[in-house]
Amino acid sequence: MADLTTHNASACASTREWTGTIRSVTQAIYTVTWGRNYSLSRTADFGYTCDCLGFKFRKTCRHIGEIEARDGEDARCTWDSRWDAPEAADGTCPCCNGPTFSFSFGA
Image (tube, rainbow, N blue to C red; front, side, top):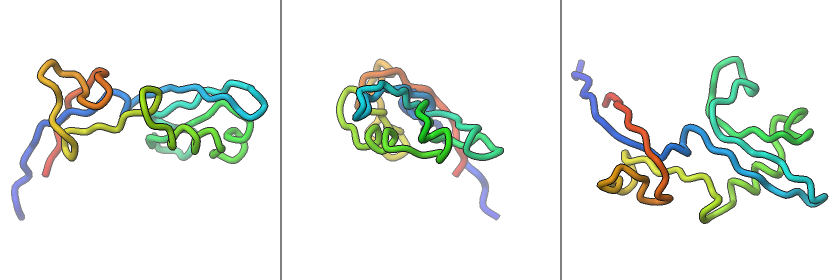
């Protein structure tokens, strides 16, 4: 069996936790959150949640789809040094200039 090698990497903090707001067609404002989601299963998976009634009953809603389709400053950044460009020298995300976190993984 091959040996496991540990590698260091970093990712944008919004890959762990992120919150955005969206206005519905009825002009109500809903909060969509990305992070550990205990409501979808008994294990803590990462995923989106929304505070609208549709999500409460169906575990999905149109607001999540609209948030996922966003691009620009108010979008959730998914930068990860394992498959994207290396981080900036000052430790900020090269895509959104937000904070990053470091982690190790085995390969």
